[in-house]
Length: 193
Image 1: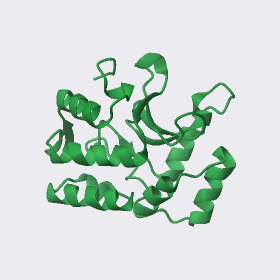
Image 2: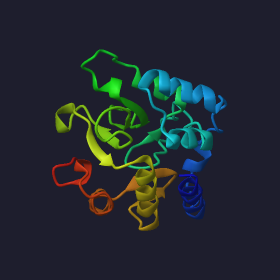
Image 3: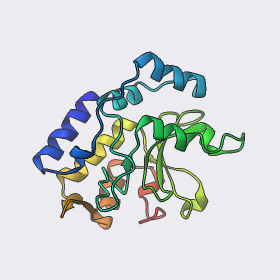
């Protein structure tokens, strides 16, 4: 995971993407406190989450309206404390929030969540209130797969920056992500654009 994050920064630096300037410093809480939160809430703490937040504690949030610097597919990287708020919205027994932790958001209801319990634990799911009947659907097999896929999208020109703003080719994104993530509904022809 660390190698992928180093590679991502190298790719973003090469393209002079402004997203890098939006990244916060690494999280200031200890590994023990970070792990304690996840163990108490989910009975599990993925090593990748600790690596992710020790790399950077999300990006500047809230993001200035004129500069919506997404990392990928309308995904803002949430600081840990903000991600906790997103993930603790509804803790009723029938809520999907109790089984997921929100890592990325569009700010408008579309989220990328890591599955914390049950089948496919550790996989990344996509949630949109207006798509897939509001149910989370699998987007990546793991957090590592998310970052390796994002890196490939930058390298192949699926993602770019124009006038300081994130841009993507929807058609190329769907094709590339489906190729890199077979079996993940988010990127199939049944998936949203």
